Amino acid sequence: MSRVWVVLKRLGKVIKFLFVCLVLTVCVFMGWRIFSTGIPSDIKPLLPNDELREAYAEKGDELYIFEQKYDDITRAERNSGYFAVPEAVFIPEIDQAQIVFRYNNSTIRRVAEDLSLDPVPDREQKLFDVSLVFYVDLTPEDDTDNDDLSSAGLKKIRVKPSSEKCERTTLYNFYRYSFDFDDAEEPIDMSALMEEGLLIAVHAEFYFGDEPDYEKTPYGALSLYYHQRTDYDVKLSSKDKKALE
Image (cartoon, rainbow, N blue to C red; front, side, top):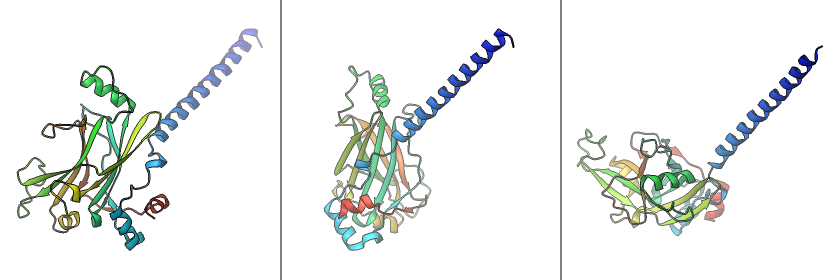
């Protein structure tokens, strides 16, 4: 066996080893990125308040909580990947919803570029206004206008958070928000609206800053509820129950 062949054989082994290391590094990195998008344990449980505690004390595991399947990341050209809502649950009996709102650190840099902000805002600041918008049918005898959320046949009712909790990871910023519909400027009876077929949709809307102009188009929005989608029961986790007891 020639010396050249020995050298080439050893070189091939080195290249193969480096390739395997590269593949493993990429897999570990991708796994870390995927894992880091998960909701942190500190904000996984529901945010408790008196109404939720009382409802749980009365109903226990029979307390009706539901969610729908929806596209949980903004995908428009102007905000693709900026915002996500990986969890949104509704509790009609107490007119409440809770959502988890997530954005990447890179979102802050992109927003700074979009809005020509200098310096780039600190991630420790609360940067975004998050609210829910209910679309209520004003013309139940005519369902032809239900798919047009800008229609005059639909009323928009905005609900702002009543409580929140924040948690940050290396790459992401998470907020859990609780919305009490009774606290809206126009209180909402979600159970009644659903039973009467008047609740068409519920969107989460995201604006930059703490005093946004709601007449303007939101920076991002996600449809959390739509009347033609399927509702799925949500069971309380052990952490939820502990928080409510």
